[in-house]
Amino acid sequence: MKFFITGGAGFIGSAVIRHIIENTQHTVVNLDKLTYAGNLESLNRVSADPRYFFEQVDICDKVELTRVLSHYQPDAVMHLAAESHVDRSIDGPAAFIETNVVGTYTLLEAVRAYWNDLEPKKKTSFRFHHISTDEVYGDLEGTEALFTEKTSYEPSSPYSASKASSDHLVRAWLRTYGLPTIVTNCSNNYGPYHFPEKLIPLVILNAIDGKPLPVYGDGMQIRDWLYVEDHARALYKVVTEGEVGETYNIGGHNEKANIEVVKTICSLLEELVPNKPEGVSQYQDLITYVTDRPGHDVRYAIDASKIERELGWTPEESFETGIRKTVEWYLSNKQWWSRVLDGSYSMERLGQGS
Image 1 (cartoon, helix red, strand yellow):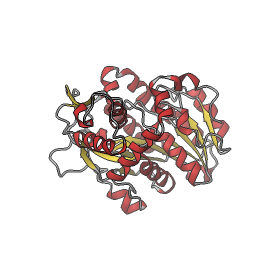
Image 2 (tube, rainbow, N blue to C red):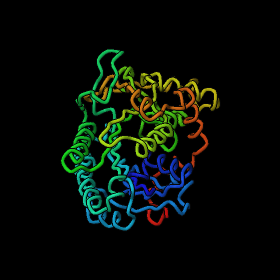
Image 3 (cartoon, rainbow, N blue to C red):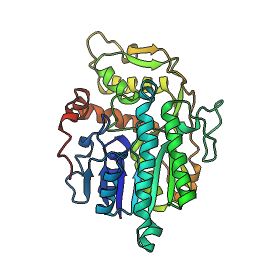
Image 4 (cartoon, rainbow, N blue to C red):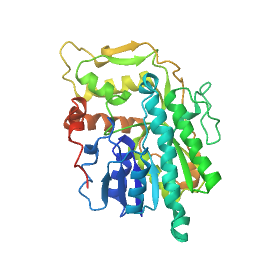
């Protein structure tokens, strides 16, 4: 098969590409605009493979989308391109509406035109897989409830509202035009190659540099944590075996309060980096509580029983094994994250990839 992956230079997209190239015989075309979060260095392991291609394309550019669809003739589209940082969406929502809503609409229309012209057998087997978030469901009451595929949408932030909008568009293109779509909603991802503005890499890198570890409010916001390579396996399973028109929730079965995540990282660093920065006696001493995020959801938790029951997927990593792998990866890959922090990764984007 030939897969189109939008946002393939991002955190989750690059994990999906690495998984497909390294574990299957399929071909991947990476479509990425290369905004600040797009980093082709996350694909260095596979970029020389003859089954990998890169096209710098904005999903809001229908002309370019039409060109690459016609040229490569994909069998499936996995749509991961999105603005995804909640704080950024609060400070500047326009980019989230443009990419997540307008971009998804533009992509759907370009793909629909391409799909309509396919010969019958290829048209029947084609898939459009839209990758979304559990944040579209909003906040969970209490400690027992779980998000299911039937949970109603109640997004809280500009980010989650824009992703909810894109989910509705994808389902409408199935219902109205027959475009064979599948939607997945995942919990919080973490792991190697995560952009350092997100909680887990931020805490790791700040701690080893002796900087404050910012924690919103009381730190008791609960998230379900999913190791990114587990997620990549799940997404491949869905796009190749999932049923058209279905939604699959993907979770890690690892509910943790934010403060617990931060303290776990500090404990691992006590073991792995005992020589602390000057003036730091314990990494936990760097924890700094800051004003809570506006409209901050308190708890997310995924019921991932459907994908386990119907497709046989379960996460391989517990939070304990996954967070250790993640901390060890950041400690061993300073070149990758230091180039992100100093911006040099973004100056050498053109001409990379196949």
